[in-house]
Image 1 (cartoon, one colour):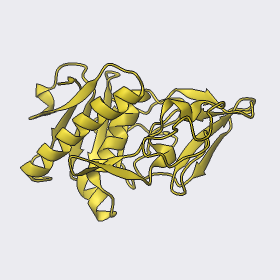
Image 2 (cartoon, one colour):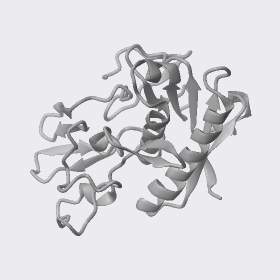
Image 3 (cartoon, helix red, strand yellow):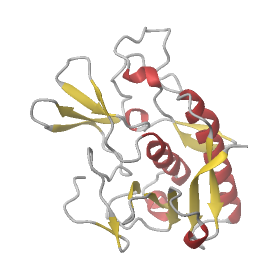
Image 4 (cartoon, helix red, strand yellow):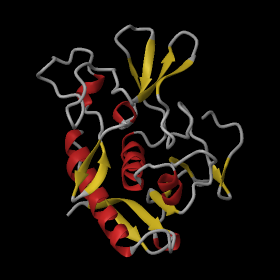
Length: 230
């Protein structure tokens, strides 16, 4: 049994009790068994709470609501006004877009776990750029099942190792990538030029990627603060 690292609160009526139960169990297993083990982290898991008031103070929380409160966004993670990690999953927004809400939720939970403040960068082999250290973006188009529920593929530590050995070092959980610092056909990453701070987006921006790179937007009264770099 993993220790709860993330709380999930479902707004009533957005999905069935069977969906809630299966998603939380799959997220808990995916994060605690797959992600934490891959990154040699003590296992943390996911626990459902009946409402936001029941969540222990300061515990990172994902709110599963019908609609995302950011136009065009399926899900995102950010900080609340107290500086605590919070994510929002638009369940119906995902469904309307043809996306799997369980996989989108896993994507945000995994990246909030590894890069909660969206400020981790890794130098790229050319020495000119660094890449944002996001767990799921480079392989965002691939999913695998945990307890029959779709979960997001994610990159492994050797993905950011320029000396990774082809055929020896595994770069992502599903084994799709063969070179570090690359992406799948539907993957995405952000890089930053050392000399100027210029930001470039490589690949297809995921719709559940609505936070700033290098700084984090804050949710104020349920809305994103203005001036956020998307």
